[in-house]
Image 1 (tube, rainbow, N blue to C red):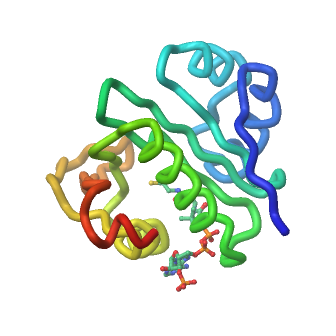
Image 2 (cartoon, rainbow, N blue to C red; image 1 turned 60 degrees about the vertical axis):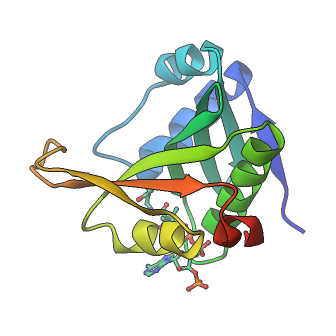
Length: 147
Ligand SMILES: CC(C)(COP(=O)(O)OP(=O)(O)OC[C@H]1O[C@@H](n2cnc3c(N)ncnc32)[C@H](O)[C@@H]1OP(=O)(O)O)[C@@H](O)C(=O)NCCC(=O)NCCS
């Protein structure tokens, strides 16, 4: 059975190494992860060194800052998302936001399967000129309750 554990500033190097493999064009170094993880409301999950997710919670709203998986299509992304959403729900969060590139079919399918819906579109949001889709999930919605 796979394990998901909560990560803190002590895991900054491991998170940075994984992040660089998943997002080679946008590395976040160890210091950046350590600083982020010291911020109030920021939490990270690591899945068996195969994936990670960062979340930021402010009052009853949260944002998925990043999620990434090394060996893909083994269910890691879905497991991380489920666990992250479960923790947010338990913490009293009502709404979860995220932003995803419109051409990121894998991530969009993952989020949509968990009930995220479009809340906006940011044209030319990324450095490469790509658009960002804004998604939101109401954690009290029936589809979110199932995940
Ligand atoms: C998006 C990402 C986290 C998915 O993780 P994963 O472990 O490969 O996904 P899973 O195996 O858990 O798949 C869960 C669901 O996601 C969707 N999905 C995942 N990969 C997909 C692909 N290549 N094409 C279409 N749908 C896909 C499917 O709905 C899938 O459910 P299914 O297997 O029942 O069809 C992974 O592809 C990744 O790390 N991508 C690069 C980083 C990234 O883009 N992060 C998101 C930034 S917003």
